[in-house]
Length: 501
Image (cartoon, rainbow, N blue to C red; front, side):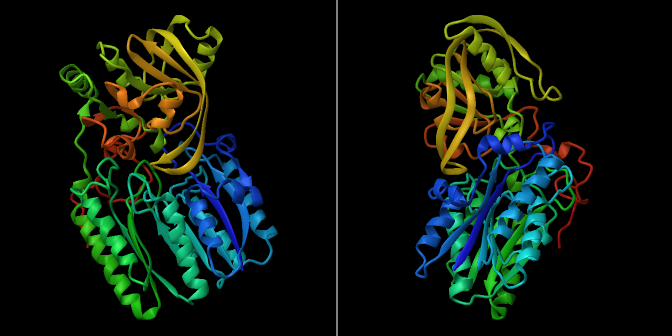
């Protein structure tokens, strides 16, 4: 039994003015063949594939194709798109005879020349292997699932959780569905409903028992315990995509014609329920200045309290540029009893800090180096307190033992405000980032997390209060206020009076 595995993963944001290039994929690590299998045997979806395949009762040869991954950012440029697809298909051609294909995809990867990269890839793979070789792909919960993806794959397996703490588990579930096909002669039939709606990410917390999303997760997990169900998922979609065919979707994959009716009914029922509860996803936002003021009051009233403020509009996990100074400008107005921690992406600032050295003081102009459309720079007297390599292993939201390298980085201080400046984008919420910088995120007065929801996996149990700031950026919560040009209309919440039948 020869099973080919590969990965093409990036969440695009078409509001980000910076294109994703081959260099961005190289920075995150391009691997192929046996090295892919060795390096990622315990990491994310690939790890779930590999561990599951090794546990199969029949001896299985794992054939490594390509692993392409880049941090969320702007659309992939046309030349890079061609390279990614060509190299993946070339690796598949060189693999020779295979019995199945397992792919770890995101589902919201957009190129300048192709709004549905995963659909394009799956279609190319299907054309290559023919109609009888099983293709199973995993997708992020924020995938923009298209009919082309559904038509090209036998099973699409989605994350169930936000924060995304089931990434490796999703790989195992995808491999489990493939095992059913190969060893139990399962015949997958996919029910698919596209919803004319896009929702913010801030309140899609599947771990909060009081949220609507928690109930959806429990429903999906319950369905998948039925041996006749090969997979079920809700994709609430990455909302910052100005592309055709944008929308949330529900998938239910059943085994055999006798279960087709049940699958169709379950899919339709959940789609209607999600539509009915669409307003439950709308977040409560606090103006940036008010959020910082509340955090300062908390710090004065209870010196050991941690307040976490989500700067979701500049969330690097959502593909924003990471160089907003909006929250920083508010933080420096206050004296903080314990550290106030905020991040920036600024390779030029890091280079200047490194040139001056630890202990140096100067008046620095910070931020708005990547996105002058939404942000303004700020000039502050700062001191260089640390210079380091932002390399660490990320586990928790988005990852299981995922190597991260955000390049040379620096910590600048202005009084008790600590500004962690990295050369590259990455998880600008992760405790491991701040710990690598020499800071204890849980001992701060206030921490700015550039993440809309996933940061809660690390901080929900440790923070006195969590606030979501209203601020500019490439990933605003109220995205429908932006006049998208290419999305299908009508689409909620742009078209509030829309009726779904």
